[in-house]
Image 1 (tube, rainbow, N blue to C red):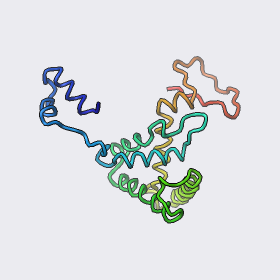
Image 2: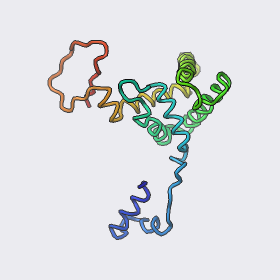
Image 3: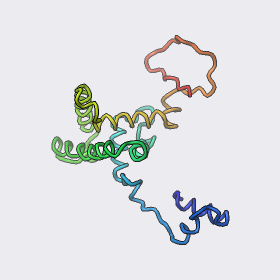
Image 4: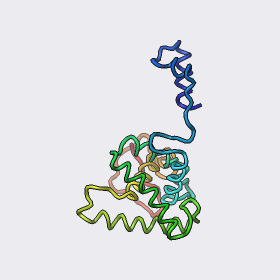
Length: 190
């Protein structure tokens, strides 16, 4: 059941007390399954999931795709980015595909995992150089946006917060220095 169907059903159950509930049910509003929001369709979300999965791949813990980071990116870009940054982000998705085609002869979605990793590593180096240039401080690099959203979306998801980070629901006392061995999970305290 999608959101509009749920709103329509609740409106009917409540006797149409929700404003516009009858309009939804009478008009037969159906969401377009290919459009996620005003900016992204399901193919682009799948594409963003694959980019995120290349950044945070599944190992002995789930990767970014399992956390639905592409969906998270679509919402964040639509709701929180300025139109200028939205355009940079959308153009960046096209740029990754163009670079993929020029370097490997096929779109990003058709690349092998090691080819994807090489391509995104080059883009990461490119964005670091771009960010160091003082004249570029007023515009953002598309890959930096994607990487930041991937990290934010993954580590604030249920999967990231429970499978990768150690979650302590009610922390006890504060220990400033605790022994840490490489590979131990990091603690997430809300």
